[in-house]
Length: 304
Image 1 (cartoon, helix red, strand yellow):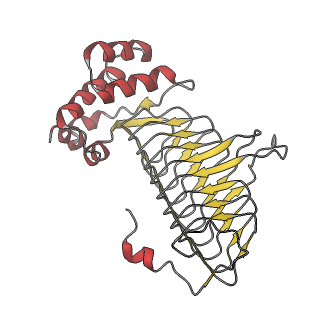
Image 2: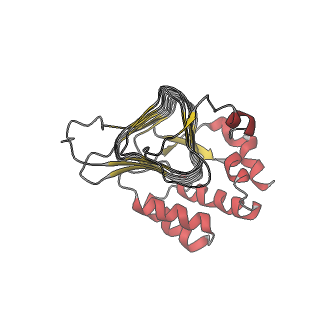
Image 3: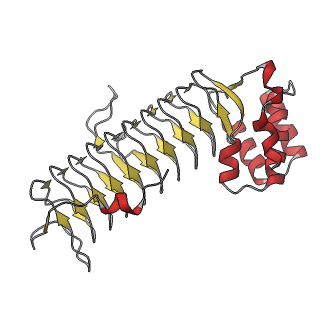
């Protein structure tokens, strides 16, 4: 679901090179700023940045080399955007946290390199002094998604349209949140987990698992498609199936299941699963038991 080169080239607008007095980090590639944009003299723009019509770039904003902003994008103070990002129309990055405890302290939004941020996305600053909301490299934030204060999003995460992350939530690398998913504050979603459309989590979603659509705090199996796409070898996927069974189908408590997984399965993904289980503070999602699922072809496909 990554952007095409053609889409990138269409994110350009009639614009003028910045003047000598503008806030530019000088280099070989000129910065292009549309004449209707408002750019603070205290902002820092690296080589090849493109600012579209009616954008607002406030004080203490940093934009990395080669990044392009579409029309009506707003970057507010203490926001940094990495290199080669694409920000589409109407996104607002770095606004104040929606937290009544916020007392006006300096806090940050830090977004990594190579991110695609679609229409109407909002990312809010941290609440406490010097705290930050962080988005890792290579993320795709689809239209209307929201990242609340002090959330931490790993690398290559996808948030589909309308996905909402509450404050202090944590999304690990390569997780995929489908449309209109909800993640409660302080809740974690593990590596390569997938939340199906409209599902919600108030308890931690273990790595590599997939949730049930339109449910809260339930997983149904492993994220089979995501595991294959990640390049995980078939034997490791089969071992992960054994770990899933120990966790959810053995009748063991979560600590006992983690002990059993550590004793019986020595793979990187099993170790990550155990690390996640042992560090959970909210408890983990339950297993959605559907007796008709024993013939589910997704389970058999782990061996392919």
